[in-house]
Image 1: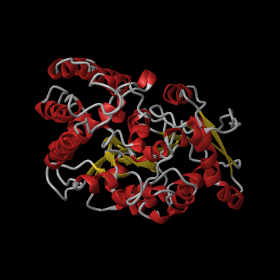
Image 2 (image 1 turned 30 degrees about the vertical axis):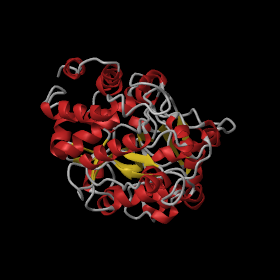
Image 3 (image 1 turned 45 degrees about the vertical axis):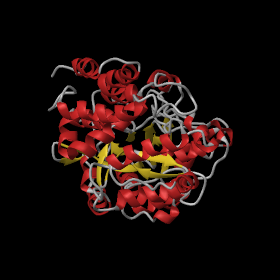
Image 4 (image 1 turned 60 degrees about the vertical axis):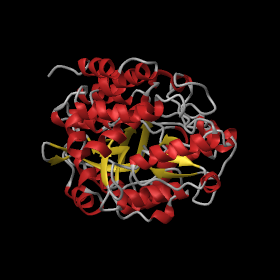
Amino acid sequence: MSFTVHRRFTAPIAVLAVAGLALSACSTGGTDSGSGEADGVVTVYGTISDTEAELLEQSWADFEEESGIDIQYEASKEFEAQIGVRAQGGNAPDIAIFPQPGLLADLASRDYIKPAPEGVAKNVAEYWSEDWAGYGTVDGTLYGAPLMASVKGFIWYSPAKFAEWGVEVPTTWDELLTLTQTIQEKTGAAPWCAGFGSDAATGWPGTDWVEDLVLRQSGPEVYDQWVSHEIPFTDDAIASAFDSVGDILLNPEYVNAGFGDVKSINTTPFGEPARALGEGTCALHHQASFYDGFIQDPANGNATVGPDADIWAFITPGETAGAPAVTGGGEIVAAFSDDADTVKVQEFLSSPEWANARVSLGGVISANKGLDPANASSPILQEAIKILQDPNTTFRFDASDLMPGVVGAGSFWTGMVDWINGKPTADVLATIDASWPAE
């Protein structure tokens, strides 16, 4: 996910500490607002909060002045639970920013969300890949347009240390394992650091590892079947991905650099490895594009990020070289109203103009093809944009965000914790699969 604060991420204090933001609690329009009549106010509801909310409002300030539309944004930590309640009660916002496509699909399938207007559909067709468009599409109808994005599966490292050890960035998974062994032999220390700790969400970084390996080893078709439960968690393809991740994370010679043994992964907060990377006690760490904010946080040592800086990153390689495939996250914008002002706001948020305006403010990226990568605030975000815009890249949304909440934000997370603690893979997979809701 971009460096937005969603249910999984707590951003570093130095990055997000700001004065309280006055957010509008009112909500107009919604499921009753289909008349096409505009009143000059468009309400937007989402999970984006704190500094990110301030920057979001800055990104549309010029549009508000030019259009005369007052966009009133409301953030909520209870978005996932409340958006359905509000829709059913006739008190939905005009527009919602969905961090989980599955939630959008659920409300669209129950006719709460309006199909995307023509201008939005044109923008999506021109500026977004088919993969991204698919996450806003339900039963062949486009309901929402993508907004921001993140690229997962980066592996963070020190270019200077690589040069010192005489090693290069790997291009295949086998080369990554060889690199890991080489660093361990040269240094006599565990190369990898990992942290799954995230309060009630502990375990989610492990799901990102598994998702990367499912996509890279078995391909997008199997990945999609897994997400929709056409194949179960107990399938050989998923077990194989766990085994491959275990070649690193369950090997006491390879983890947990600077923190302890294998089991310490569960008790290490996911942001802590940023400090170990900067201090040089950790050689390799797997985490998304947003992690540069943690690495450069003064509280973690203020290391620099870039190809020739203290820390840089490469994408987790696949089974073969030159076959780019990445997982990531983002948001989908959809509307409960179709009045003229709401349509104008939707069109703007799906445009390159908005993407460039927001990315220029820093901290986030977008997969919009009209976005200039030079507008990104850091080299890693520029690199992530290039990956997303590459027509050869296979992109898949974070699998756990697409699965039913009881699985993706429940048993999958806790299953990763159990696995790190020593529970056999087959038992972990059976337990997760048993939690899948009956149809």
